[in-house]
Length: 474
Image (cartoon, rainbow, N blue to C red; front, side):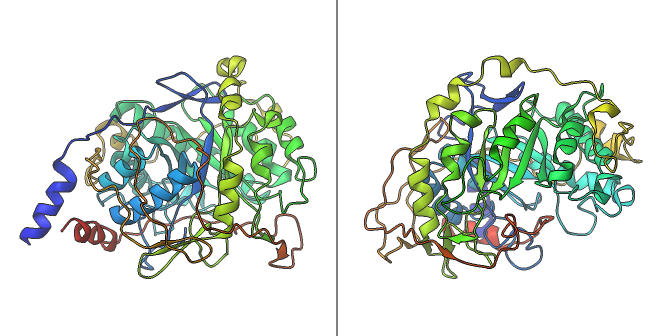
């Protein structure tokens, strides 16, 4: 018991020994570094070791194991990552060490607030029955647990809740209601404005209406601050800007007044993935968008992993990691930073039914009022979740085995402390082979056949991650 108490004090009582990352803010249709006023583009990866729907399976919360976070942050730092998306956390756990490690690595976090656990998500088949005080209490607890970290870039209020025409009828007003409640809670209880947005399915028939519905000005706080798109239309080395439909996305989103980025991308119909789309996404034709997040960091059952995390916590780099590293090293960050200008002053259109073109998509902007008890939670705050704060990062050397694609152990993997956003730095991995074969991994029936199925992601309430942190310290 005495050891547990001392370890807990180490995690919670120390002050940061480094300058934390400056918040990223929304200015018109761009994301901006609040300290430099330069445009910020997401160079990222989706991060959920154990799987994004692993509630109760023993996988749980990826931000509660400091030793694992250090290993992954160091490898992401070498890769050039500046942002991760996390689908599943438990707000009752302590996240100080992991959030501090990612902050010190120059990495921001976008966090989903939903969970597939009972009462912790908006059911797309029953939005009226699941938008209630219990659900919003969970959402507010997530905000409460993470509002103190300046490297929280934003919160996703939902992921693919609207994924076809039938769900486009009842659900849009509820997404805006949840966003309103989240933004009102943040305004009341956080020291800064934290963006709130939505992650959309790439469904042609409803995509434009989805974005139009969420970005417009309804005279309240219910609009999205950003719009994420889960896009898997670029498949293999033969794809192009036109064949993948990126040109159509740019034309569709041209009048956007909120930042847009790929919240998931990286079709795996051809393996290893060569990630040629990176040069398009960060190139001169797509400066409208604010970058994107590759799906995903660790190898799970759906074969999207950049790395394989073994049962003993050692890690093997995959060919996808090496190919993405090569592509990230070609990104012209200066091109992105220079492309802000008039976009920062973009003004949202007023909400009106004429914005909606599909007859099956909801064109009413009558947003549900907060359910009974929710306004009291907004006014008074929630209790139960610890409010996170940065801790000192004193251990900076990776202790687990990390192996390149040839099976050779990598040496001297050390976190480089930084107070600025990470950028690709022409890093190399000695002795590693990228492997660029183009063998088909499946028999696709459509260009999006390899996209992960629409998922509501989990928040695992597991003590295992916290015990891992304590064990490392003791």
